Image (cartoon, rainbow, N blue to C red):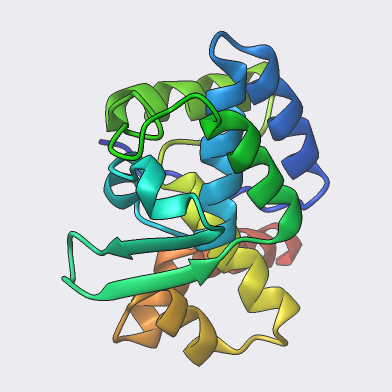
Length: 176
């Protein structure tokens, strides 16, 4: 699988949301993106969510990779989207009836439809949350590491594409 990027420009996030909503299964696609941005869950954890894991506005999940229990409160806007989406679903129903490949294709297609420079995929959602949290927190890497459950700052910076973006900017500005 290819390396995927976060959505670097915040102005592109609403554009991605609009495209996701316009696709087949648009409500599902948009909610998956919104919950992913709200929680920064790994795609495997995001796609394994069941109605009972989100129905009270707190996402409760045990991370598949680390085994750690996570509880993340959704903001009112996303919680209202959840309530509308799950109103006719049972507690044990999967929230999103798709696999990682489908999520990858949806995100990749959205990026291509918008002519984004970034290569988008399933992990782009998690990376986007982490990337913008890093900037908005005043570059608090420990906060982002905690969110992503990473143990190494260098790995976290590489994961969110920070070093890649900074290198590209430095090379573009470097004139000999």
